[in-house]
Amino acid sequence: MLQEQLRGTGVALVTPFATNEAIDWNALERLIDHVITGGVDYVVTLGTTGETPTLSSEEKLDLIKFTFEKVNKRVPVVVGVGDYDTRDVVKRLESCPLDEAAAVLSVAPYYSKPTQEGIFQHYKAIAAASPKPIILYNVPGRTGRNMTAETTLRLAHEVENIAAMKEASGDMAQCMQIIRDKPEGFLVISGDDGVAMPQIACGMDGVISVAANYFAKDFPAMVKAALAGDFVTARSLHYRMLQGFDLMFAENNPAGVKAFLHEAGIVENVFRLPVLPVTDGLQQLIKSYISSLK
Image (cartoon, rainbow, N blue to C red; front, side, top):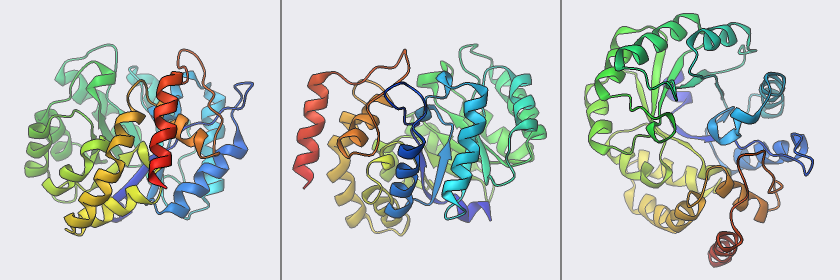
């Protein structure tokens, strides 16, 4: 069941690039093995952390197929398919190779700043077109428009094929309202690494994490402990990683997490414009923090 598959830690994979800015397939295979060996419960491809705005349509299809092949059914795979053009999302859902996907993560329409009714109708349309369950994704810091608890709950209760919500508004009151009033079986997933542990304490079902790209053991262990009610262990792991979260998001995501992964020898510290590597000063702080963990 989806409620079991997506309970725990999902990781929003970065897209590694070689020095010529082509996709580094060898590095992506290393990363997939790293996170699965570490203990994540599922992986997400083509999320914002994967620099999807800079990927061509052909590259996106190649990434989906490659991820399925290299994950090789060891954990479930969620595929990101979202945009501000509802018709385009519907078209892509009908053509994407989603047979092996557990679900589709679809970000709320960005830039256009639609009304709440517009957001509702957007998701209603793509849920009807999707061959897989939809995970709503509210991240107003990137989209420019918050999806309210009322809109989320209306979608959860009224629209078939909507199975979960990734909540990254940072508004704990909004998150708790959704948790309290959601239908049975509807998953509420954190999208904020730094507050995932207290959000699980409030009743969330896990997290889709950026930090788990690097903290592939400690982050899933923290989430498992929190879900089991062992908050002594969960707090200890949370505070061990807390400075890392701050450094990871200090300038840009995915610049921060790629800086960590570069220090670990997993990916090159390469991006496509307009994203740039973190500044030298932040890179030094990241190096010092990593050294302090040993």
